[in-house]
Image (cartoon, rainbow, N blue to C red; front, side):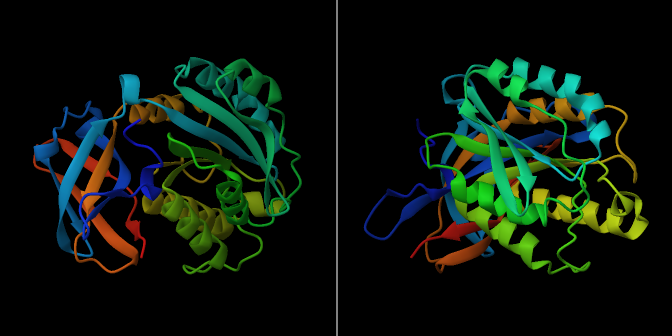
Length: 293
């Protein structure tokens, strides 16, 4: 696969230049399907400097390989079970090129209920109700970091669909939440896109206005920073996951592998900006790229 190891892949172009990889999602305006984009339609800046676009590969057909973890916060309200029919249908409808895993966040860890597999029926059988114990996940962002650590390197793009309130009982409301910051760093370094669906947590925190507000902000920041999407509907649980899962499925079919040469850029995390010259489309990717030494 041309997208081997994704964001961690480094292929020597010369003694002084190498290419780094990012997954980019094309998003049409006003609900329209995005136009097809070619390599020459894309411009990239890294650390506010122009970067050479070396690869632009549509992640479809033979290049569609995807590893996707569905992650459920065990502190969610147990009425999440009302959404399981939609969730199981979504899992069943994913193509054969998608391996799916299932994990539950508990005590700061990602507990694997079903490892990544192409047997989608095995994943749907493993889906269970969350425990519904307030705060049992500790920080959901600690759990995301733990999942990243447990995720083996492979030759597929990697994404997460997180179902959580986003509320972090281990950190007071803080734009610099250390667990969120680490989860973003870990996911960006590993090239993992984290998408989320907001769902109310169990107990008092689950309907505390200011806690809910911060939780949704955290989930949105996690998505924006890693190149994923955050879905929410007001301050309550959504009536149905169906529109979110439909949109998420469409996003997965409108993704590209971007290979860039960050010549002259320092090692470490650097800001990245990807734009398209064609009208009617926005390009979403991680806000930073990891440049190795």
